[in-house]
Length: 264
Image 1 (cartoon, rainbow, N blue to C red):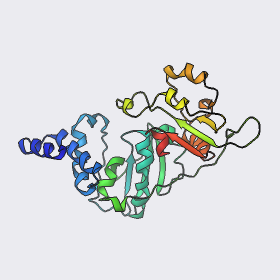
Image 2: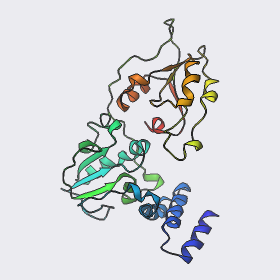
Image 3: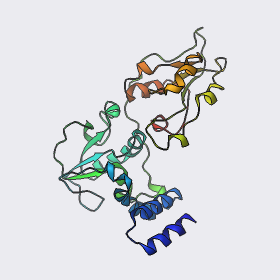
Image 4: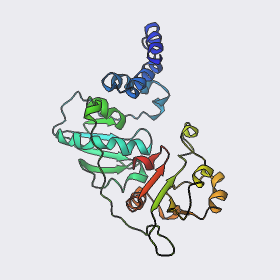
């Protein structure tokens, strides 16, 4: 029904970018990736244009030879998107490209030495010249990705460190990481976050040792979290995503809403 509506809208106004973009998202959600990627580029004519960046080098969308060339790949959306779409970096390197990978500052250390990346930068650092640039969310379309050809995720190299939460009595208990809410600045956060009260119901210390994997604790959750000693808070030990990744590597289970920790 949505696709029919977009089709009618585009028949009346073919250059309507929001309809083109919405149609592409609908096709991607339905699994028709080949038909969805071209229209996804219309996002730069919608409210997402505020995330668009300009570079002297031309945009690469799979239409130019990369062998011996330098391409800048950079984030345009959230941390979770970066964690998902960096899987395309080795594919660029396989085409002979020298890849400059830019990520958000909290991810910088995590991506040090990432396969296929010649250099890794934190956003805000000076960037060298390149022959091409490509925002991460344009990479699937540039490679003509279909469901059968989605690249596998690539785990950054991490060094497990810090102290994993264990039972105070020395007996082993399952270690469970919890994340109940996403970033407060996401306008759709209310569609993914769950109340701490709901998560608190499962925090039975007789079942497991629970640890909060959230760096950001909402003000409305502080008092309730203080009253829930079964959930250990380690936010002061999570300086960046390398710490979070190392802690996750020592857990038996992570229960999380749809936020960056799920993709990590």
